[in-house]
Length: 271
Length: 318
Image (cartoon, rainbow over all chains, first blue to last red):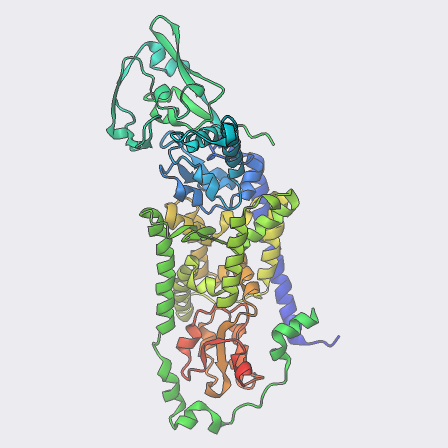
């Protein structure tokens, strides 16, 4: 091999720069491993949008594009900041401020996700299965003309995935102390579609009056499947969270107490 | 390897054409002095202005699409949807695919992901790979302004100019892919100023912006265009895509006066290797994959020897 002094200099330069590159990459990699060990994400307990795959996979599958953020009609989804470590840029729901009320009627955040970090297949399958069951009930698969199959489909889709589960802080609960509530549903600006209604309402502009506070029960998008108000003893009531709760967080959003008497605990991801 | 090198850089290996004689120089043929000829391009910023306008327009389109719910260009530069058509950042996708391959996740990626990635690859193959850098990337614009400050500081002798071997960016590219596989995280995305800037503009600023400010400050007082030149794996990915792009910067030797002003304004001057006297091996040359098609050289060229052109169209029509 002939010795070209110019090539030798450039080779030395390249090796020097490469060494620097390897060092800096190791620093970044080391930091990533350290952050992974710290498990800031799990401690923070981010409530993921509907359809989120197990956290370990979610962190690489999510490309942090924010399409789910944009498509959500109630803007319930936000992107996490650097303080969440490696979860930076991934979507979460701050149920306190704005919960997922399923008023999109299509779980479009999951449908829009290009990398299936929010896995829409769960909802598609649940919807299709529900439709299939419905059609089977009728001869020749012919539905009565007034029946809207879509209602059945979305009913099943809403119940197909558990984001978390609601927990009650008994001593905080107004109903437990026999108290009612009067005032706007929430003090801050938020959006909600009460179950059974067609239009969304601004919660800060809607006045409610309840003899015994049961906001978490009356606004739950899954209604009786997820939560009921139970009488504990005379003039003492408590919301009872049931199997059907998917952790959408509406109860947490509308709860008038501070700290919240009902809150959502994100699913513990155990993969 | 040699075959690939020859294929891509064969022009460099040919023996150069004889250097121009004085009477062949463009100013002589026009009958003016070299200085008169050279001053003709002073203060011309046609392509730069068009490019800045386009870059700001694209990034604003992201912002207003979200702010006003227009649905024209949704998402961010990591992944987006233009009027319903998905677009995927290629390096983000490269990381994702590397991890997915080891985690058996590839079958679960949606059709939208694949069409988005393919659309981006084909589009940027046509328009020239790193055209993304100079025409779309918001960090590039900030870095360009930072570069001006940096040049000013160098001129005032406040700082010294240092350059490194540009091929180190390939080490970073491989490194970031390896890191992604090892950690099972899109590590690069956590420190990617392009994504951070894009997301900050669209979804509101966050702590991550501190990193971008730090990086920019380092480029001003430290190494010129540190990120874009030596590190950014997004740019490297686009340079692979654009290695043989049809749309390219075309160089015509007979109009060149060898002033090398184009190399002074260029982010990747090695792509303009043929402008120095006695280097060109053909009458017409085209830039390669590292070229960002920014057009600064076109503005700077007094002889209009550089222009946007279709690669090898001269050969086809000959």
